[in-house]
Amino acid sequence: NAGVTQTPKFQVLKTGQSMTLQCAQDMNHEYMSWYRQDPGMGLRLIHYSVGAGITDQGEVPNGYNVSRSTTEDFPLRLLSAAPSQTSVYFCASSYSKGTGYTGELFFGEGSRLTVL
Amino acid sequence: GESVGLHLPTLSVQEGDNSIINCAYSNSASDYFIWYKQESGKGPQFIIDIRSNMDKRQGQRVTVLLNKTVKHLSLQIAATQPGDSAVYFCAESLGYGQNFVFGPGTRLSVLP
Image 1 (cartoon, helix red, strand yellow):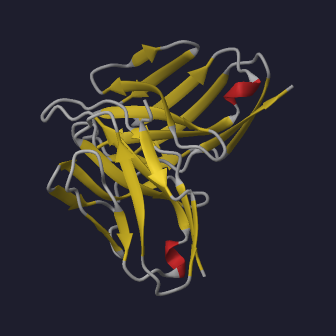
Image 2: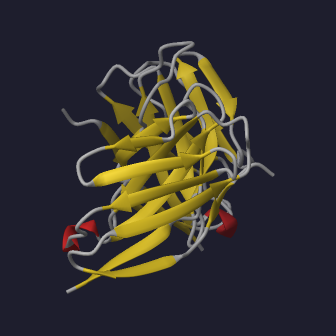
């Protein structure tokens, strides 16, 4: 099992450029999410999805868009990159039981983004 | 705001000793907690979890303690090994274990 796969692993952008971070999972998980991790801070939730066609904002959604057209994929889009978006981005998924505990989040290896 | 706090940013222990990593949470409504381990250049990995209806849970060499009175969570690692060197995060869930709030993390260094 590949688990959660993120691409690219590294990316350098110039201010104002756009890009998409890809995330795919092969565990048939309903719940998927994106976090960013900055030095000295914990992971902060950007956006999440509880199933195909359903997305919602997390703690720090500004500057990011997401969509969920399939169960497997949950891309994160930066429409106009800013230096403040320099960070390591993690995609995570878990099995959603609706009203029950989902248990652990399974994380990808991360995508390191630098915005100049 | 609602967040999980950091008690100590770094912790150094001798190989073979026990380690205790602490975490404070601020939302008394949180009902599910997880400890994650993150090695350099990798994503966080699940270590152990605990629900709010429990005070203690044990795994292999790890124990999580939950004190709801003072909103405190701790991770105990027995007989710490070099492979335990990593950053450890506590995380609390605000609803059904989906949207977690993470603490800043504690870097554990194991000395030979």
